[in-house]
Length: 106
Image (cartoon, rainbow, N blue to C red; front, side, top):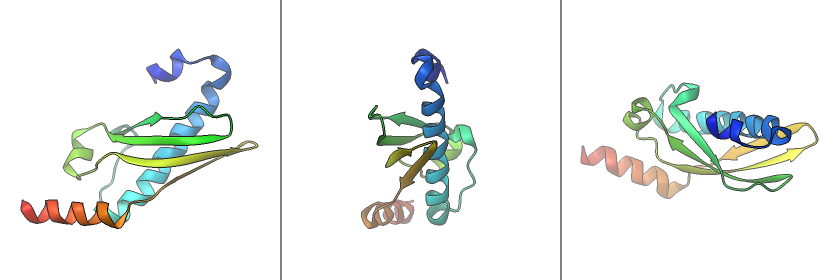
């Protein structure tokens, strides 16, 4: 939130909506893979693009819970359409295979 408050006030609401939407998209995507219940503060979002109507973001683990669930950084995209913020995250087959291999090595 410190980063949010350092941004111009006119874009703070949009950045907050993008952050919330990105986290929700990530939580829904990761649960099917990891089965882990995560709290809002278990991951952080870096918005990589300040385009007016869309861009990209990266989700980073921000807690021991996320690290224990083997959550790695994931990329996603967002789009702003009117007052709606749409966000999506998808894990690739390679990411899933890497997670399974890592679990087998432990």
